[in-house]
Length: 107
Image 1 (cartoon, rainbow, N blue to C red):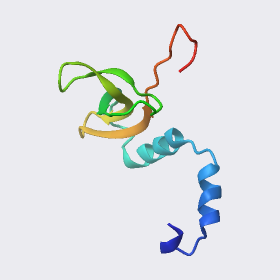
Image 2: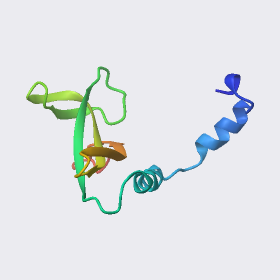
Image 3: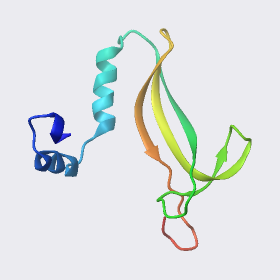
Image 4: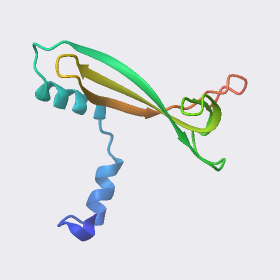
C-alpha cells in the first residue's frame, strides 16, 4: 500500500497493530444511513467456507447448507441490522467461528 500512497510501510504496520472496534464503527455508519422512524431488526447468518488443509485456525466440521450435510472447513457468523421498511440489511459484525474442544479445554 505504501507504493501507492504518501505513507511509509512503517506507518501502515503501526496502524494495523492497533485494535479497532469495527462493530461500533459500523453501528455509527448504520445510524447515519438509516432513519430513526424505521423499524429495525437484528439478524444473524452463518456461512460455510470450504477449505482444504489442516493448519488453518478454526478449521473444523460445520454444517454446509448448500450440500445439506456436515463438512470440514471454516464458518463465519455475520450479525446485521435490517431496515424493515426499506428491506435493506447493514452488516454490523463478521467473526470466524472457532469450535472449543470440551475435552482439552482449548480451541
